[in-house]
Length: 168
Image (tube, rainbow, N blue to C red; front, side, top):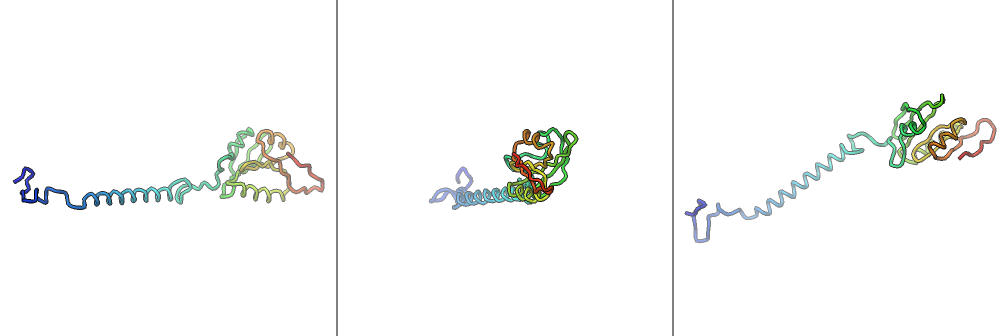
């Protein structure tokens, strides 16, 4: 008898004392499947719960990098915005500064901003348009807001019959 408890034979220790053939391959295969399962689960978690995932909150109406939020633009103007609309294409708010209402809209991309601006121009007025945002202007706020926020002044259709001077 051997010290390990198995019977000695001419070929060496008993079969119970040696690891079965293929154990290393079985352990490697089990490890690979386990790693694959973990990666699959991480992918599913990201798909459903990650940023912009199917279950997570949508980021479509939030400003993209390089743009400002309605609240940030309002703070730069010196007022506090009340959010009036949040959709996939825009986030809109209004605030009051020096007794005047100021409408602010932010967009998820330049295409949404350009579509909104094109539609708004048909109503007349002037708009201050920046990277991912637009602000409705009045004659008394145009210079002030342009100085605070930058952007480009865009004029809508003139419904008075008078020619509008290009801003900017």
